[in-house]
Length: 422
Ligand code: PMP
Image 1 (cartoon, rainbow, N blue to C red):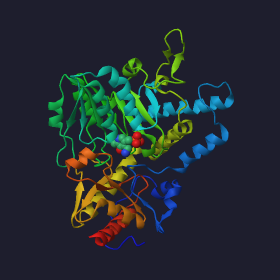
Image 2: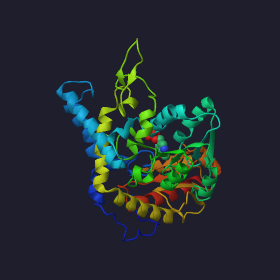
Image 3: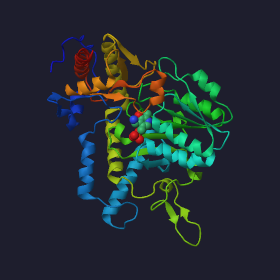
Image 4: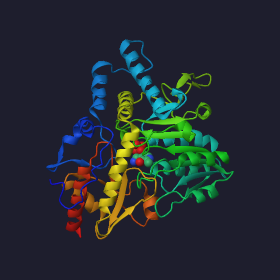
């Protein structure tokens, strides 16, 4: 397919600080075709693609040292345990946590937030208390609090956004008060790309004695995260959005909080002693929160993904995605009747838009026929989309391996598709 037709040439300075061609070669999937066209994968905010170094970890694990961890006294179990616990240290360093015992492996961001709700929330929230979430939240940082509020009777308050999709910090300051027990906010919005000032929000939350939980699902792939600098009480992310596998994620928590929080799931691995006669006792952190056999291979592969991402450099990745975002923004703005949702000054590589006279769903289906993968729908952020008066948007989201030429293909394809449906 021609990449050049009717778009302005890309700025010649547009080159990442890493070798883009070499980096693309790490991703076998980027060579495939979709409907006979080269794949242009712009659905990175939903799931990023996986480099072969991470894929190879599965082969390596299942071919050489597949065994259950922590329990065995045999070589395979020792090797699997060492690799698993080694990843805990990799994650600790990735987040700049103080201690690897503050790193809890979960199935993903969703499970990490549910852990906080069911353990910390259930023991610390009561009628009269307030939990502040934001209009920008993914359903996974809304519904766990709603479920718990129904049971415990606390109140959920919502921090509004301005017309650009930036959080209204004046409203945030006003909403905070001595009843606020928790602020639960995403670091980067998946639907609009807005980057929230989470360190400032943490300072303000702490001034009223509240804790802050940061949903970092969309931040960890694009920027260096330092949980100590943010002063986050809890921080969550998912492996599959940061070049790692599905089925694994992380909850970081402050040690003094995790140590007194009760377990939320019972089973093997999380106990100290189990008895029918006296009270069962629980393991120390992090194992207290890791009941049952974890996703061993996925955790180990996540460690490799984080090493890969740090090898490329998150600063360089973030800068490149900003180049892609501004070029794509500039190009789609030329399309008649296209409206971008999310124009906050601080944005990650997410381009959400609607087009007059063309349903987002139709655009998504037709552009797929041209080999371009974007996401259409509510992006699990229905309250936010309703706030902007829409049910769905089209969303193109960028990763380290995307190119300016792919944006040209996307924009040309988008124009073709719009002409077909209008
Ligand atoms: N929060 C945000 C901001 C997200 O983008 C997502 C995934 N779209 C989630 C939470 C949930 O992540 P997961 O499905 O991996 O648990």
